[in-house]
Length: 112
Image 1 (spheres, rainbow, N blue to C red):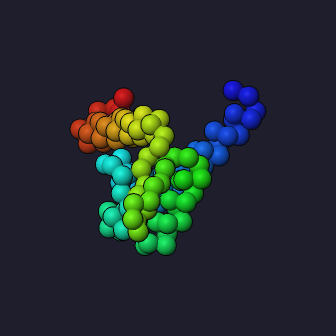
Image 2 (cartoon, rainbow, N blue to C red; image 1 turned 90 degrees about the horizontal axis):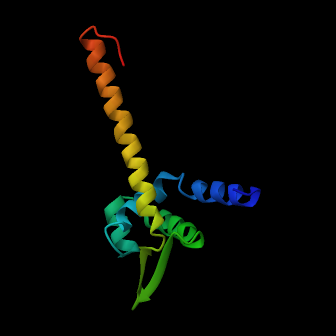
């Protein structure tokens, strides 16, 4: 990776470092939705949802389209699905390892 690519990767990962944005992306993985629906799905206040959707849109992670009086948002970067799958798999492996270590400790066995 070039220096420019490293810096752009860091910027994009930074866009994904905010939990509210991840909640919004998780909701959008189910399909396109207007702001009101995203508020209901995430429990995040409307102003905060709009702010974070603007950031995700500026980073080209989500696209938006107007239908009547509503603006609908949808994931525009398919790699997000793969990235989430990779991270969720990693988290699952970590949890399983912790559970195995706790079980071994409880039974007096050395942890692997």
